[in-house]
Image (cartoon, rainbow, N blue to C red; front, side):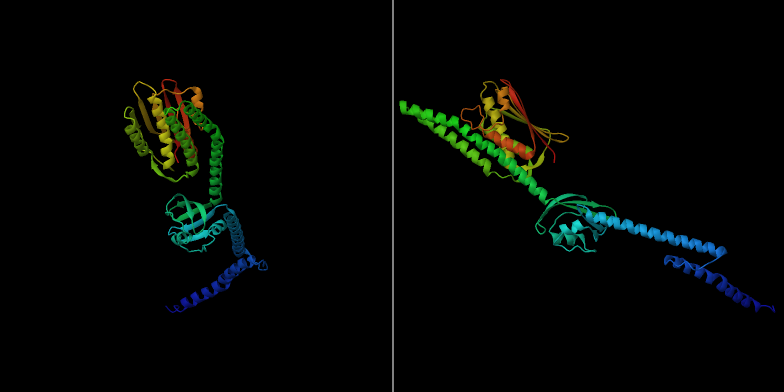
Amino acid sequence: MAYWYLIPISFFALYVLIAIFVEKRLLRILHKGNAYNYKNYNLQYSGIFRELDEMVRTYSILLTKEREGLKEYYDKFNAIFDTMGAGILVFDNEAILQKTNLKAREIFHSVTLKYGMPLSKILIKSGIKIPAITGIYDVYSKKLKKNLQIIVSKKNNFIILVINDITDYKKMKKTLEDSRHFARLGEILADASHGLKTPIARLKMVFQMYEITKDEKYLKKLENEINNIQNIIKETLELFKMEEVIEEININKIIKDTLKIFQNTYPEITFTIKEKADIYIQSDIALFKSAVANIIQNSVDAVLMKKSKKNITVGIYEKKDGYKLLFCDNGIGMTEEEKARFLKPFFTTKENGTGLGSIFLERFIIFQNAQLSVNSLKGRGTIIKLFFLKK
């Protein structure tokens, strides 16, 4: 018990030894590790401290290279990110803006995109109305004066908006559609003089017969020929007046309403509709009505020329990639020449027909990117198939 005072002295001596021989050397090793970062290699060690020194130096070099590599990757990513042709906005899971690229800042030129901006604020300032759910949206912004296609990709912890400026594409598409439309109308007008020759010749002949005979029946025929010419001119002008208005339409309802009108007008004909699908499409309702009415009117004219039972059937079908409409009649049918000229302007087999009704059908086919086929046997009947793709 007389040596109890030696215990604290021993601990103190041990602390001094550790401080002198271990702690100071470890601090110097760490100091040397830092020194290597600044290209200072003057410190020397031996034994275990040299090994520790080498380890620190190695890790320091590796960390430096790793940091430089990550910085290089980050710089490359930013370069690629900023040179992408589409605008990109990256948000966190709370819809707070984290990152944008150069193209996005160009598209949102009137909106200052800042880190931390809420998605809702960006949409309001830019005049864009889209839901913040995964999907593809075509929108027009009055504030930005641009047509945009926005792809929203929503994940668990982030939201990405990919924005394409399709303003020029929309303008070019509209120009091409207008060019095709007016080119076709130009062909129609070029044929107009030829189409008017027959009714004008008949008008002239009827007038001459009236001058010779003074028979009033020729006055009635004269009136019919004048009305026929007026109809040709009126329908030709209508082609220029019509401007397509796209909206959602129900094919079934339009066909049923059209058949009802024909049924009331021609009670001697049996009209049947086979509905195998309920179809909605984006189209121009007036153009579709005109196209359907033209096909049914042709079928009516064909069956009225037969003395047997008169039947007209319309079928509505949905296929995997599109919709099919079948118009069937048991009328007089068509020859191969008549089938080939089915959509030709001013072609008609009716005495007082204008031959312009089929142009509305052709216009719908072009507008809807549809396909039309005609199967017909002279004296047996006709089947017209109209097919258009799903959009």
